[in-house]
Length: 214
Ligand code: GAR
Image (cartoon, protein in one colour):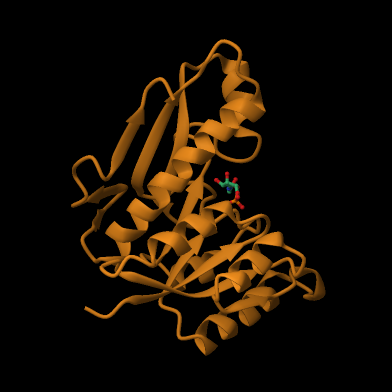
């Protein structure tokens, strides 16, 4: 099977992007990272991707009058690079329902919480404030609603007594770097079926990861 030409969309440092680029170097990986695209021309992740030899582009959302115009340019860039699969990795722009619809089933995201808990921002602060004992991260297919959509993989970490948002967030991030490549392998490999809100066909340790004590 030919490799899926995959774009990683970022807005910042791109540590998840790095884990995906590394995984895609494995010969049997079903996705090839064909483009790293940022909505912020100064995103540090762009230089990292360049250093890895991955093509990069920036589509600066600030110069467009509205979301449709911004996404029109995004779509043109994706087409120019013959992209057929997208990973959002710290991409901090909401996408319109029509863009999401166009990429349905080929657009995935990572979120730093165990969805459906803690959608939105400041997830680690909110988890600590609520006193939860388990926190984590989720890779999911993107739907029009923010931080919703069928879940591909999740990893959980335990919350420690002395955790701060920074220490908890660092342990979650380490797990993000593990599950995002696993999820992309499953999704790009064509092994998953979406049934309503459920993702089927990824049973097993590669889909859920519990990291107690981490
Ligand atoms: C990651 O923790 C990712 O889960 C989060 O932004 C960070 C990006 O870090 N994404 C979101 O909050 C999306 N709603 P990275 O640039 O180092 O990958």
